[in-house]
Image (tube, rainbow, N blue to C red; front, side, top):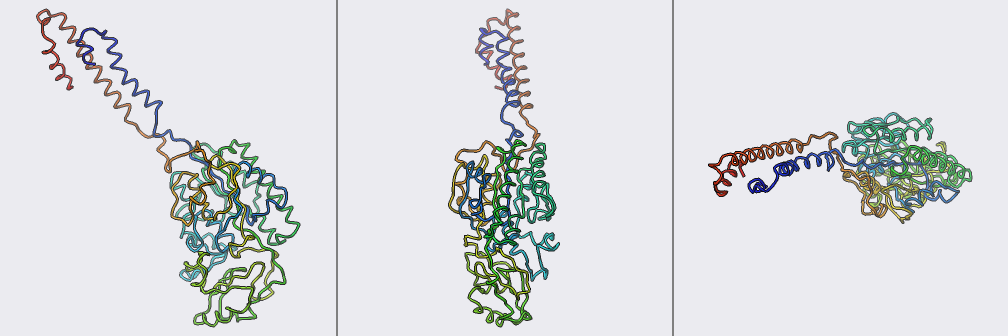
Length: 487
């Protein structure tokens, strides 16, 4: 460029434009090129649980909305829930990717000998943070990664865990309708960009309640199942009306299945051991037994072979595949009744026609699983997965790093779209208005180049007007100019 001036054959105006071009280019790049605050929107995910919705309910009666999701997305034929197959343990496993022995919510009713306190889903003890803080739910993880979450009645979501509630949440109230819960979730997802949630969880009590009262084999359950499909249709239509249907990844599943019971299949513990020797923890079909001090051997020996329709385990002998040994809240003796059987202290206890909690490998204990959305593969049927695998899958969809968990993304990688999704965001979003040094650097370079041009131009004019300098050789001039410009 320096030769342009020294050669005398180039118009100074053209050279000036050439020198100013880098400044213009830098300014243009800063305005229209990659920016730290120009990241694409974070992916969106809504997880829905219909409590107690067994895997085979969708083929029992017409369920067009479930099947629409399957056609547009995926279904998994066999989902192994966490043991024990109860509501609170499994809902916490879904959002932590951990087995109950690790996340600490080992049952709906628990006793912690270290705290000397009891937990029950029917009391306010569920709102005590200490019960939940052996794990970190996904709504806390995404908030720590810079995202936002919303929860509508999900077990544990109205508890302050590790110092956080979800950004938006509804305190549990069974009288709030499904439609009202959906409307609130839609409102949260539809909020202005800085306030909209990225991850939502939505819980509904049915068909679990009806399954307990009627039994899954009762023909009246057909109406209940059809009603759940209609509620799913309502959710889908609301997503469409809000312009979210093609943006939000939707996963619909459950915590467990349901088994049929019979009044002819009851085990009464009072027939085998005095209740003065132990404390009863949790309810059928899996009961924790806490022997009174010094009574362990007596209680175990009386129960071990008492009835062929129940298994009695010492804590250390609970089968490893249950992942249900290593927590202080798991009692020293565990009773598990066989499928369809109920264990009680005596027949004065309330009786249900349907129940869950049994061995998680039983087909009757396995839940439904369907999903669709921009990150989900289309029209695909997968044979099996574990419920703990859902957590790493959700973290992948949300583009956040998972915490240590018992799941495996590789086990469910095939559920993901074969094409990269357009809504991929970094785990921690860049600052919205981050300061850039590009304008300063560009301006500085431009000023230096303009000043350099002026110096050269004035020099050239001076040389032309002074005859005594006309015969000065280029070899003498060039080094001096280079030195002045620090080239």
